Amino acid sequence: MAQEAQEVGIDEKIDKVFGDLTGWFVNFIFYQIPFSENIKIYWVLFPLILGAGFFTFYFKFINFTGVVTAIKVVMGKYEDIEKYGAKELYGEDGIAAGVDMNKVESLDKHLADNQDEIVVDGDIIDTIRDESSNGEVSHFQALTAALSATVGLGNIAGVAVAVSIGGAGATFWMIVAGLLGMASKFVECTLGVKYRDVGPDGTIFGGPMYYLNKGLKNKTLGKVLAGAFAIMCIGGSFGGGNMFQVNQAVQLFENMTGGTESFLYGYRWAFGVVMAILVGIVIIGGIKSIAKVTDKIVPFMVVIYVGASLFVLVARYDMIGWAFGQIFEGAFAPVGIVGGAVGVMIQGFRRAAFSNEAGVGSASIAHSAVRTKYPASEGLVALLEPFIDTVVVCTMTALVLIITGNVDPSNASLNDADAILLTSGAFESVISWFPYVLTVAVVLFAFSTQISWSYYGYQAWAYLFGRTKRTEYTYKIIFCLFVIVGASASLGSVIGFSDAMIFGMMVPNMVGIVILAPKVKAELKKYMGAIKLKAKAITED
Image (cartoon, rainbow, N blue to C red; front, side, top):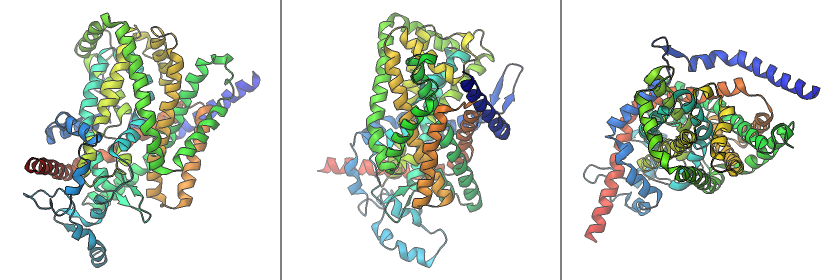
């Protein structure tokens, strides 16, 4: 017991030192602007909400009108459209729906003659080769790789925190945030493909680092924003995308197997070693290996979790109408909730932003590796993520919590670590054996999030330190070591810092994607033009 107390003391000391060193950054990112005695709003929510609202109107409600097309793309309905992407479409009715292969053939000559940015018919010449490349993963694999980083503990624990603090009404604002976030995801993932790079070995990589650097006309601004994003992305990958995930997984596993009587108690590091080995095996193979794992795990996880939620809702079907009534009533006329309606809205938007990462830019890193010549096609696929993550999965969790009576102001002080147990208890009240299944799901959620965030972090690492085998394995070894640390350490300040890093990624990203929105509109015009020409060709045949 003395040894355990000493270990806890060491954890607490490390946590305090880390908090003292990084507290200024956390306080800056999560600074709350006071609007009244009871209402304080995180400043970082403003660019997220305003940006998403701007994109929704600028792209004529693409988050609603583009859903059907997005589903068709994921299902492979437009795979053959690539063959219409060369000379047949270039310039047709003013729609450049593909890449002129003559420009690709003369690329090296252009670059040799002029080292500065060259623009040909509105295309930046150093991205033409990228747009015409085959890519590394399918639309579905890119979607699941990105979803694996967002669908996870935020949907389980984060929702419990939101409804505990903001009441049932927070669910309504989470849904609104998810719908608005679909437009932000469309923009950033379209840009991720448009400005991606191809390595000498054919490896494709992209993300905010590249579209901020290559896309913005002000090169100094682009480099500064890209560098800031990369630094925060690395920090986020080690913390929120790694240590927090394994820490929550091991806590739920330990609780399921007996708490302080568990065989794992005092040996959490062993759980971390196993997870580190499994993560290492997958991430060594890069995005192809990651995509092969996530395109199997993610659908399985979502089906299990949503299936269990539906089981609870069917079992308590007589309360569903009442639950939705609580959600709508609480959204606009909350009773006894700190901050009133605005406070409820803040909780909903904050938790949705943490969950689906729309506007953060992280997902565009995974989507950049897709096989397509049309950047907008992947942007459309990406807009499905906030819908699945927030509108579907988060809403399911909230309904289960409301129906089982777990929306209680007494839980308002819950942190994410305790909230995951609250959600587990809510399911257990209806499905006695489900905590065992939920534990397996949480471990898989954590695992899939880790492998996807390892890819995000490595791409940012490579942008800063170069793309060599030494830098690659250095990052991946450090990442796996952090898995072990995350499983065994007390992470209060570490998680606060890593969450701030992830939210901090949004600032340079949102500045860039607002400026580059016209480029995205042009890409959407190209892709929709290609779809129309395909339909015309089929009709004529």
